[in-house]
Image: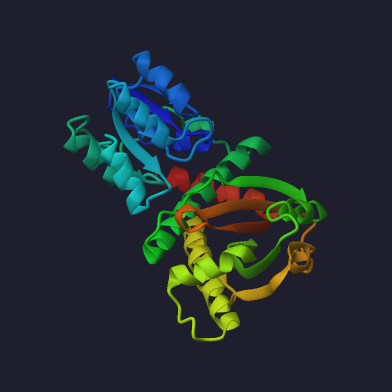
Length: 339
């Protein structure tokens, strides 16, 4: 049997490959996006496909639609950080047999494989396929890939919580991860909402030698749409209603995202109270006192959108560069413990 793992993250592909038990007689192939996966399926390399959703070139939704349209011989199991009910329903309607949340739960994988008669052995068996593919002294690009996948999972958790609260589908992007000088960060973030008035809410977090700051940035043109979506009492003063809406959305996003990060790093973050950095100001003014804390910053940008409501906002996770090695060591260590 041929197993195909399709994910734009090399770190995620290795994690998935480690979940394939030695007792399962399969050949494993890898694809970085949907177009490559379709080529491999047509070449007979994808009897079972483990498919991510958020990918460049061709995402999981487009890939699944192509598999169904051309009736390709492939059993698809979605493996994604986006676990919104609407995402699951859409993929199942397109023909996927099941949906697994990242990071992989081996027991859940075992149940799915057994239910469809794909494999009935011990899913928790030690695996030899890719043990040497995640060294702690990894190149910088490999570390960035690991961070991006970590954030992708946490981002999906936050999107799920927000979707449940608002009853709307949340469009999730591929996270943008960069290591920048603090002065470069000011310029890079300013590009998010060029020459527009914004509001921002900040929350700090720390645990296990890892600290950082989460910023939720709202374009002011979206604020009224957010208030209407939350169905707040508009008889109150408009300023108070807007502030309450921004704080509530920020708390949901940062809380769920940081919980997702903490779970993957096997720690528990202590959080500061959310702070309104400002309302209706230029972005540079809002961030001027925050971006000078560290010389170099690992900056993660996540652009959430509710397209049906014409709403968009950005979540920024900022870490001092000194936290990078600790984060990667924990990611690799936790992954080895749970393989």
